[in-house]
Image (cartoon, rainbow, N blue to C red; front, side, top):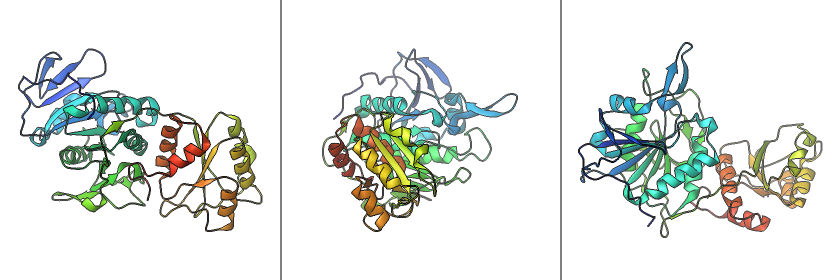
Length: 375
């Protein structure tokens, strides 16, 4: 059981509460504004869900004069656009930050993790509204920060802002909130009709409503007339829930291309990085003649770096034992990504490096399956 946050209200009418930022807080209860020291009488027949809005297209508003999308004021629009949310659960909306997701990284992952950790015992589930561009990174970060998660943490967002015609944000949010009331002990992404494991997901489209897919793991469920969960695909906790913060930004990713010279990136070996993901071809093959990426790997591992070889192909598993080029990389000290996504592998290495810089320990931890990210 995680430490309990004593700040949740319990004696005032209403079912939608909004906290903004870390300073003086304002709550919005439906259309009424109240001060943060007022208390809320929650309907005990409904699950209690915390919505964490972090920014992204979902809450953006067109700005004058060019109608460029920028972070907007979500609180009023959420009430106006999706009033039926209050029928699903007792909701608290917190806005820890409001950013384009391209600007979300380690600092914001820590804020999200801390918000969930401090309020873990106060809520039955959590919904994170997030921009689509880096949603999979943040979902992986949260999945690696909570061991034996027993409550749903559901990421969602939108391809079109909530306030605009034909926005997908409304249905995505309704689905996410309903899913957060169910028995789903995972960090998941619900988007379009799909329910996906967060650390298995990739963004596959910038234009389609179904913007995400899980290439190497089946869906956790799907949204139709009803929400269906596939219990055999769900991750099950094996002990008490534990929150482990910390990430280290000492990981690099290089997408190797045919005839790409190693001198273009050789300086990275002396940059202070501790781990490097090389995206190669097929099952993890890299050029070994001209240019010689095998010698580059040998240099990197000689300097103490962990080198992980991934594939540019989203489906399937990297296996360095299949072909001569892969075997040469393995003999030079590289390890393979397996069937993890590059995004999840990148975040997992950052998490491991916050705990150890010993190369053998990093490799061993990387090979363990923490929360269903590999198989």
